[in-house]
Image 1 (cartoon, one colour):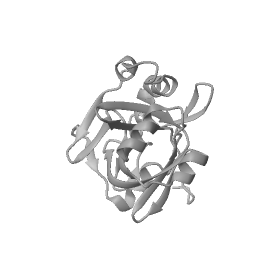
Image 2 (cartoon, rainbow, N blue to C red):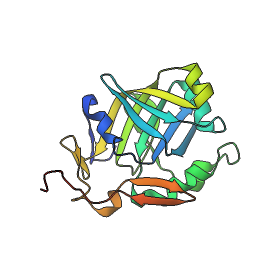
Image 3 (cartoon, rainbow, N blue to C red):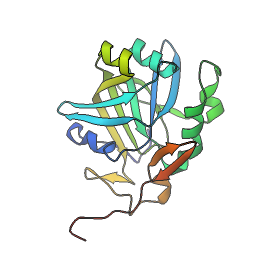
Image 4 (tube, helix red, strand yellow):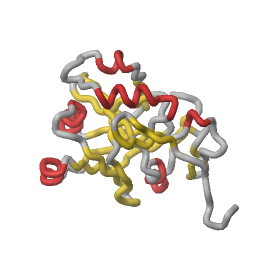
Length: 192
């Protein structure tokens, strides 16, 4: 694991995705690993921390999540724009070497049997909370966050610090048609 990755207290885990970034979802089952991009994800609860993510029925990652019961939500960076686009626009169903072709580097964290994508700024390991109606009707998956980590060069003390980090660490925000925005400058209500 990279020296800049530090554990985040679970009560602060929601802050890792509360700013609405495009995310990467990874999962594995029976030796098959996959990563996909998703734009519809949000924090759901504080204690225990929970997140939601929409996983289309046509994705291999969804199948892996349903079979394994675990997944990772990660926050990709501006430096990972091409990777994010590539894993979001190709399918493991059509390309058995998708991760290699997309340049996805996978790493492990002790105690968690899920694939983590290197180079992201945050990772949330999740246990699936099965809700068959929501999953079937709305493609909506709920995960309880069981582990959280962030890159200390951009997230420390329970807060994002995009304004002082290298711009390559900014999060991506998908609009449509391959068009993304990077998170902007910090502004405060008190003007400081």
